[in-house]
Image 1: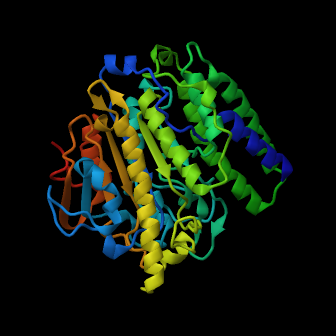
Image 2: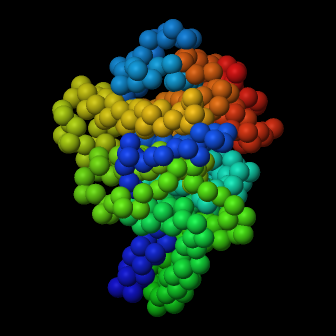
Image 3: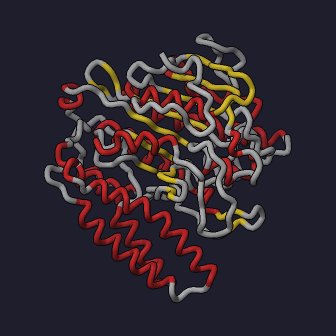
Length: 443
């Protein structure tokens, strides 16, 4: 397998699957950002394993809602926040406890049960619906960021390929988009895209072609199970091919970054510490939005079924998946809540960075909408009802933030996405199982 592993490393280094560099005050001037209308931005953050079910939902509704224990880290952002209660994804009912929930989170569809390469989410994710409309206006139609690589192979306990647990963004029913996890390599692509006359795409395309040829040649020498793994890998690579092809189109030449990208701030690579890795990736969403390198981004805190160790959080000694199956034990619930709050804190940190980035009299947050959520509520029950969902930012004045909205039980999650796509300027009549826009979301 050495040839395949070397090729994979070459792909990650050359094609830039990752993005990282903290946003800094030194990243000025902002003259161009102030001189042109602010574009709208759309971001979705996905957290695996659900939340402590009893400490998430605010007790009161409307503009005067009180923050729940899980949401207390967002106290200074309350006026920018929308809490949504009683939404669910009907497409995630049945199947297994995790894989159906994550791959359908932004598609609101039911994935095809499979052990092999015939993966299908049977839809297009909400972020990619928006990217199809506005993606040609920026060097990157969208960014799919994460801290963990795609998990391949089969989870025979439930009968699903593990690839489903690694993706929330789908450009088509059978096309999960490649995640970017390496801070240095993706920053290099962002920096090159921002340079006048930059031509990063052609070199990346040549390297990617070579990698694909190597992987296909290797496939012929492998057994059946290894061929499945290589095929899964190649299906993910398709997303990179499409992205590079779009980036090389002539219309890209008219684009300029709204603020400069400082090439001297190149990161070393993937940090050893998980928390620092998350921080870098969220900082890079902020930088990508501020420069207008993309207007659409997704981020996965981890793959679904992740047992990421959170012992770096005071009071936690276990992995996330382990404590999510709390069995109502007091200590498990306590640790589960601390892990939930840590994720909410990271969400708040991103919102504050966006709020600090000024565009004339407004901020990047004012023109953005940032979704935070999970595909299940209670990890112990794999419960898809009443999903934990937050939206922040005003989308240029289109979102009615600063309130807790409680809906009838099992209101379609897709209704929220219809409203968000409308606010983004890419309206749709229907999305998946939607029944209309979500009341109270839009101004």
